[in-house]
Length: 141
Image 1 (cartoon, one colour):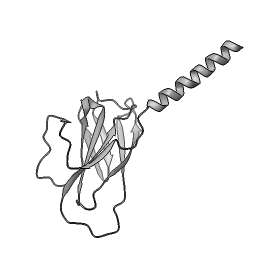
Image 2 (cartoon, rainbow, N blue to C red):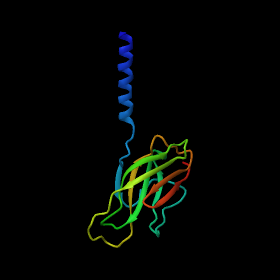
Image 3 (tube, rainbow, N blue to C red):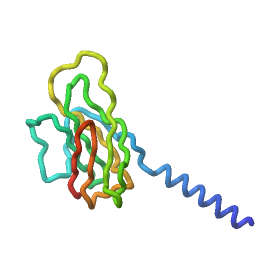
């Protein structure tokens, strides 16, 4: 009985520790502009039509989502959630904060939100990212 209680307590502690190390869906960082260390064969275009973009960073450990808009009222990613796991289609959705109800500049600049790459996805298959009205396919890392 005592061994069973110790084993159960040990398993519960391990679960708590592992859960504490699991990346959340919250952003790791937000900033104006684009990251310097994008892992892609393509360069981010200087001229853009404003379409959202997504790229892996840090050898696939992070996912950068670039949204174009006003410099004073940028689109900012708030959370990433898995819609389909790696085995079901490898798809995520990024939620975006509502824009403020105020006048905004009419420039078109990039704003990057970086998330941990969700654990239930894989970088060995294309990743579908849904954000705003866009569907982006991030190539295999």
